[in-house]
Image (cartoon, rainbow, N blue to C red; front, side):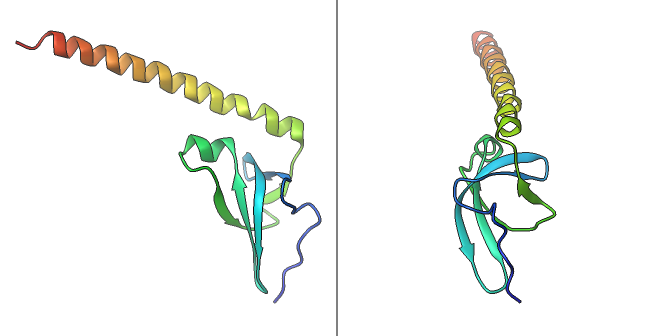
Length: 101
């Protein structure tokens, strides 16, 4: 059964996927499904620049650019927190090294 592609599904569109936001960078269509390659701050945070998702109208919806841009703060805060944790670990390891005989 062919799936009708909604008008908002275009390369470059900003979408909301469940609780996160992304941008469609490629679209692959067959008779039975629509696959979207989506890049997002979430995917960068997880160390993969984009991910293929099957289009599900209950999961992937058009998004407000303002909301999507605001979501970047969550990931920037995570990066800052991670940097603090890495620096603390390095400081701890230097202390361990200094205590070696």
